[in-house]
Image (cartoon, rainbow, N blue to C red):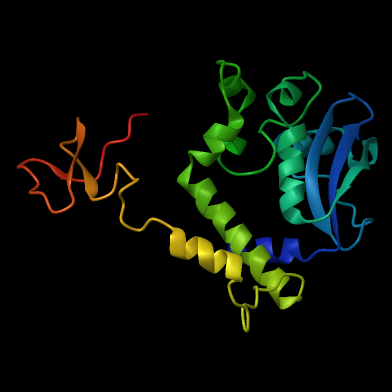
Length: 214
């Protein structure tokens, strides 16, 4: 619940930026995203290596610049994921240790990525926690847009089908004569799939549905 509150708070911020913080002594850099109402809030990032650099070399030896402005939090997350990718964090001067965008593959380190063939996007969407998090974000975003009157549900009051549409509907084949799948259903035994008549008897050790081959 606390995480959802933080996300809702970030969504309503005035500015959504991609920033870059650089250590003027080592030339090492960190790129991240930040949502704020004040561009002069002094935020430099929260990365583990960045914090170590600030503690070691001092905050005055680190400069922060705005690289891009985005329209909203969702666009910000997508853009950070595009910038802070496998190649980016592979730079020896980069202080980022995780992929951008948050969640799922965002927890992977350089060493894990170096084992080859990692598709960050697939890894993220294969993670149930990431899917749940994105669903919450979308729900919050849509609710916010509705409350602000930016997004409205379509009003079908008083609308009718045109005469041309009615004619097409009347001519449409509802008998299934032209549909080879009409009146059948899939069954599976966990290994094989086959079709039977809609009112057919399901054999023993078979059940409705079909096994999808991956």
